[in-house]
Length: 105
Ligand code: SF4
Ligand code: SF4
Image (cartoon, rainbow, N blue to C red; front, side, top):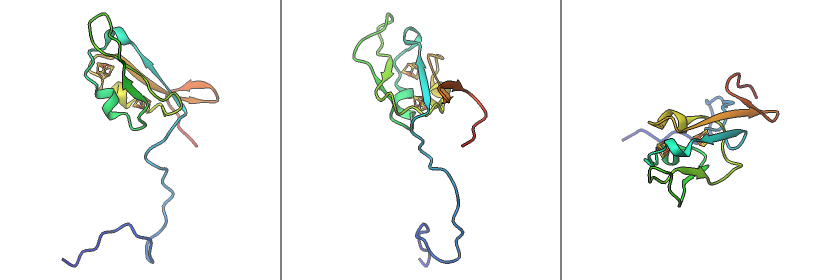
């Protein structure tokens, strides 16, 4: 009661220059399919929907991830952080080269 949802533009709020949370592109993801156990964490937590589980199996009998949208990966490496088997990782790309640090627009 009495509290209003925030978010509408109005007076008294300073516009912020924050980048959008979902960044698309400018990254590359590497998949080590034979290490994968098919848990699907990487697919679920990818903020760019860049991944999907493959139809095929790896040698262990699991469905590893595959790139569903090659333009979508932003190199955030969330997939790598969630993967319990170190079977996937993402890197940022700048100027056509992999970039793992020093993010600057
Ligand atoms: S999080 Fe790792 S183990 Fe799980 S599906 Fe993705 S690559 Fe495979
Ligand atoms: S690095 Fe991984 S989690 Fe991040 S956008 Fe690319 S595929 Fe998705």
